[in-house]
Image 1 (cartoon, rainbow, N blue to C red):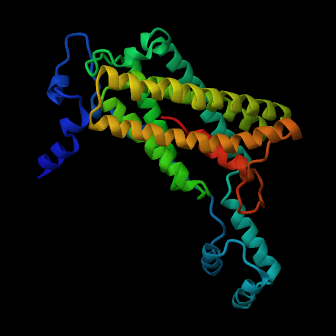
Image 2: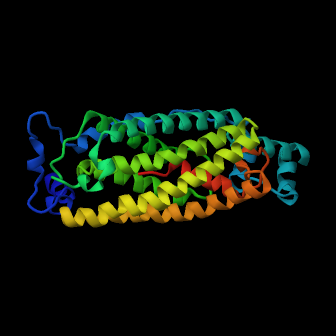
Image 3: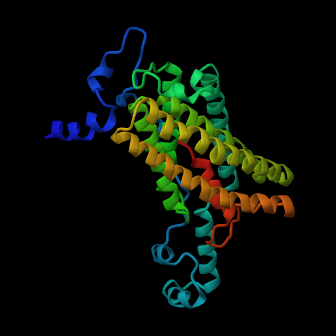
Length: 342
């Protein structure tokens, strides 16, 4: 039964071009390495993030009310006030502290952005270092010549491993972090990204995969730089970095990505290799990603215009201890673009 399910999931008719089997990829020539799904297992332990959130002073009655109403009105507190023999002001103070404890501190947010800035910068430099000497960076048709019998270098493997671990950790942290309004969009994005990374590696579309990942890393460096400047209260630097981020986001994700990379996957691969079932799936995921890029750029552009004409980027509401529950555009763009890539 297990063998039947495995054969169905990894059907050669679905995942591989015509007249190619998994057996053909099992024994590469001497000095040549092909990707294997098992290689990606090592990303899982790297994706696990540990953390112990701060807890409010235990109070079962107030905690039960907090889970249903995070910001209760005066009429909601009358019964609780009598039950606990607390005055209303004291109860409101407890709720204020409880809400604040659910929000990440400024230090935590700064450290989080610093970690992401460091990751994006290092992984982008590493990716460009790998791609600069690769012929497919300058001629995307090289991504499909002799496909899928293409050598996978150790650098490509580590590049994929780091990216998969990073985006898996972002998806896992969604379920432990404060739930945000863009939760569903981010979940779809992370899932599409992880599937693209895994499938493209298993299918040995590593060449085009490295191009896609490097394009997405480029803009995120400047977004995290803007966040760091914002937390450090350097507003002019924050505004400048965000405008640069907007320009690079537009160039890489709305120009180069669709007209260079997606074109290669849709058109050039059709001409050289021909379509097969997994080809449709992978292209569908790329188009989903591109639709998200368009949505995010609309949100980002609104903030960049405000930064240019009003001289200040909209704040991230998570920085505000007693902010409303409605997240502003910058919060959405920060969360979304921080995780976008394939």
